[in-house]
Length: 314
Ligand SMILES: [Zn+2]
Image (cartoon, rainbow, N blue to C red):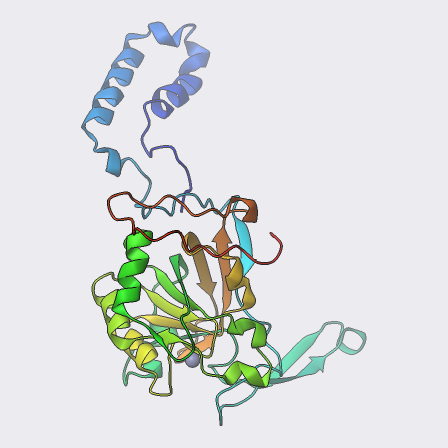
């Protein structure tokens, strides 16, 4: 994420900041031999530091247009409520008012039923892997990730390795640590019977390659999960690789670009196999949603396939 386009070590900051601190006792800092030495030393240091190491961190190619300080922030979840769909047999959501302002001086609600895999939520390895990591075991790597969006093929079909290679030819190699999300359009059906209609998903071999070769961090979709059927092959493969899965992403996903945006996720960290999460997308203003130029060396001959953003800019 582009915290700054300036190099971490520039040829300006050290001499100028030093001058400000020392200027009170020096009528003409520029004539001071020490400062000339400092300027010369820093100039020499700049010369020997490779350009790639002058950045504050390694920003993946094509992901430096989004600055978190100025980015358009898009909610990517659904509101937790009693209308949230659940898998057959899973506990639904239910809550009651426990204390009120008129009676107690404060408002407190009590959740009386909550499955840990309800609504917009995260799956962690323990969900399918005996002894696997629980939410409380995770590091912070899933809280901010480069976002790679795949638009779904026809329902029931999987995102295959051919699709992954085509995506990379069009854009760039999927970054290490990325969150790879399938956009099916089902988010608009959330809370209706149609939401359970089979959508597209990821193939297990595609997921295995994404985690094993590209070292992505997360998989996700705007459906019950990134699977084509109840074998849960994609989810299982992701969790067995140590990854996490985001399920039931919201309609805000339609406002995210295919490539170049970021996603943040956070939640309480109980020692569970999953939990409802808050998800936020970081993108550029909608007016700037143009297909970025593909790398000429890897560009596909096909025309751009960027879908226009939907909904107003936030
Ligand atoms: Zn789940």
